[in-house]
Image (cartoon, rainbow, N blue to C red):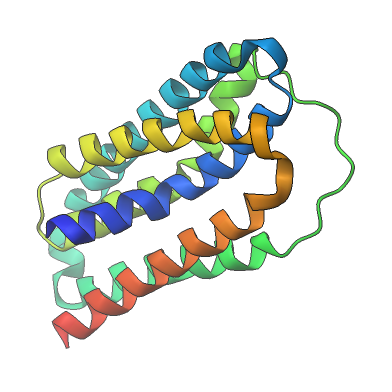
Length: 184
């Protein structure tokens, strides 16, 4: 995987975490640095671990899907991108404030936003790439983006959530088509 692809993939995968971090920042009050670090760690670690899990799941089935692996990668990334795009236009219901100081809440948010990273790990495995560098890169980029998402959320409010999700979804769709065109 080329560096620019890794950067685009990492940024695209971190957009859900960024959107949630913006929301956490809105409610952070005087604890914005503490919540920013917590968000960065939870989201970054989960985004680093899930592609590794996906990679080994994908490697388990490699011999069965070798002839159509590029289609698998395309479908997974395209579906995630379209889903993210669609969800970015859903109206938010009135919500109670999420307790971002809770370990359980942060763990659930981190796992929920890293399912797409699991799918990307499967995609990486069928493309015969290594997983260590991408996983560390994805985790680090997500940490940075989630950290600054809280800071921005504290300062700017809810106005950028939709734009971040749309950008992330378009990046994933772009990567999906790139993989497909390279293998056809």
